[in-house]
Length: 67
Image (cartoon, rainbow, N blue to C red; front, side, top):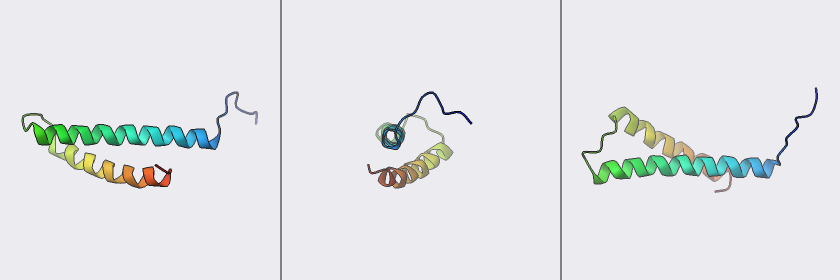
């Protein structure tokens, strides 16, 4: 098996994952905050519940990756 042509360090990969997790968590938090501040802003109820689950799971993973 040949080596890949592009390699990054494990530390760099972890930083990319951490940044992605934080960005997604922050997006979901902002959506829920917007819904709380503006009741006319529509998010499906099931999606709101999933956002909360995603945020909680993200917090665990962010902690794991050192964030």
